[in-house]
Image (cartoon, rainbow, N blue to C red):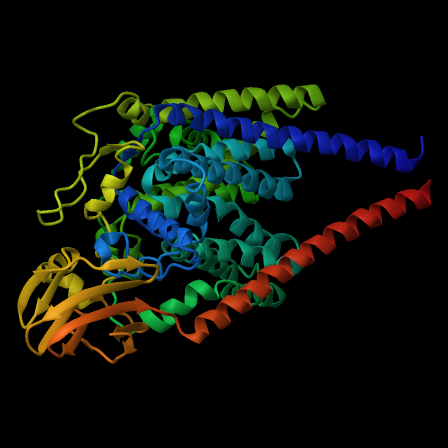
Length: 584
């Protein structure tokens, strides 16, 4: 048989294996979401309402033909808050687009499935690039994607949930620069940029880890000037690819006294609770029973000086940092206190321990080297992983399996002051819209100017749409449109009017269709001097030209990378084909 035919047969076999792996992940994802789809209910708690409100606003704007969303007009009580300017939204667009075709419950679960599928695929491909071992890569993908802490994030902490998808890509990029081929520094840029488009706090945590790792390498003199140069190039490309997220921070956030999140350590979990929850494999602040077992046996199963041994230690250290065992009181005023909830480090602990666990599994099944054995191993792995998954989420499924009249969300009373959404609550397609009549439990006033957020009376009056006319409050609900709000106001006398819309550097105001200057009120809202009579006041947000320049640069960057990878793939394919022909 000619070498060309051998190559064709090998390629065909490889394609079949790849199709099988994709199908395994796809079927596993479907199995994960179908039981939830059948209930047609969502258990809404914690950060759910914050993210659901952002998705609803994006959907409303898309329905009206507007691609970009900058401020809240139909959600977040019509206050113009910039929850979209300073908290990335890119990966929420698929959820919003699904709303055009499915009811809101189905849309969410399909979106959850899409994120989970990509977590499987990216985890698999990153481990395959690192280890060149399909069995290990499959093991890593299932262990990492089904880690109980990631499942907990998928319930409502969606920024972190999305970010977890790209953590393997970041560390693959670091591995390429430091240990294999520094010319592939762009992988780190892609991973970090995708983190930026997911969750800013996850970026800060990742930067912390990268600084520590690179710092240790510098001290140990195990990193060269060429590798440091590659890291610098990677950082520069990351900035260019992330400009649409970075620029609003530069133009509207930094130096403008905008509130983002409370600094300081909130809730801590103790080590005993972490171990107990992990042993029970419950979805929450735990690493799960598989990774807990890895902590126990990992030392004996890894070799000194290998990356697996380093991963083992990093996983344990990060697990300890995630708990009250770490002396967080000593760091309560430091930069690392921006983490707020130390258990966020569990995402990174789970990653490193999954690297070790997959190594142990692959070594244990080394003799399973036939195609049939690989298929059997894959099916067993998927079955065991999914059994563990359903055990982890059983608490959630129990709460939505049946309709609970007491837990189902009732419409908010429009005649009363806005109340926070009850926690937890059941949502279905009939009462889904009810949630937007309530204030978000966590994050309603995030990204308000500090002056508005710091005073509870100010914040409450803004949320309740209280217009202040000559120091007298009157409730006026504005008419909402994409990125702007319109108030119809009738005045008996010349008046100072303070409108309940928070202001940013690029806020604009029109009075009777003419653009006018405005001042900031004591609530940090739009304040105008208006003459007697009827007025139409429009308040909106329009980014400066710098934002669109950044969007263009980032777009060119991502397009260039896509072209680069396409050409690289075809060059490799034709090179193999030409070599095989020459030898035959």
